[in-house]
Image (tube, rainbow, N blue to C red; front, side, top):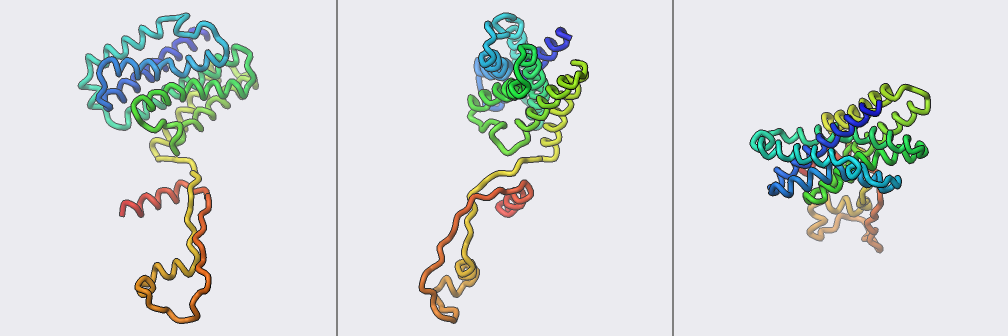
Amino acid sequence: MTALVYWLDMAGVVVFALSGVILACRSRMDPFGMLVLAAVTGIGGGTLRDLVLGVRPVFWVADPTYLWVILATVGLSIVGFHYIHRLSRSFLPIADAFGLALFTVIGAHKALQLEAPGVVAVLMGLLTGVAGGMVRDVLARRVPMVLRQEVYATASIAGGITYVGLGALGVPVGVAIGLALAVTLGLRLAAIHWQLTLPVFAWVVIRPPQEAQASADPGAEQGVPQGGPPAQLKPRTKVRVRMISPSQQRRQRDKESD
C-alpha cells in the first residue's frame, strides 16, 4: 500500500507539472519559466503541507526523485512543444482535475499517517491539492481557479471527507483511495462539462418604483410632468448584498452579451 501511495503521488506530480508547462506555453514563457511553473505546481502544495505538519525535511528534499521527474516532464515537453501547443483549451482543466484528485487523497493520507485529526486531514488534502495551482496561476497572472466561482475547492473537500470518513469506518485503504479519487475527479469533471458554479454574493442596486418608472418613460427623462402631485422627497436608491444563483449569473451574462 505504501508503494501504491508513492506512485500515486508521483503521478500527481507529473500531471500537475504538465499543467504548469501547458500554462507556461500559453503565457509565452521561456524554458526556465516552464520549469518554474512546473515545479511550483508539482511540489508546491506538498511542500506547504509538510511545513504545516512539521515534517522535516520536506518530501522532495528527502527524495529528490520528485525533482528529476519534474525535470524529465519539462524536458519531454520542450521536445514535444508543438504537440503540447496544439492541445485543446479543455486539456489544462482536465489535467488539473486529475492532479487535484490525486493530491487531495495523498495529502489527507499523509496527515492521517501523522495521527492528525480528521478535520486537519481534510484541510491538508485541500492544501496539497490547490496550493500549487494557486501559485502557478498567480505567477502566470491569472485569477486562481480556487478563487473563482468554479466547483474546485469544493470537490477537493468532498474527496478529503470521503477518504477520512471511509478510513474512520474501517474501509480498506485501497478502496478508500479509489472512492475518494472518484468523488473528487467526478465532481470536478462534472463542473467542467456542465459549467457548474457556486452561488456568489454581489452588490445589487434596488431602484424605487418611481425611479424605475421614470427611467422607463422617455417623457420623464425630458422633464415632462406625468401628472399627479410632485414628490417632495426623491426616494433613494438602495444597495444590498444578495446571493446570486448560477442560473441568474448565466442570464446576466446572456443579457450582457446581447
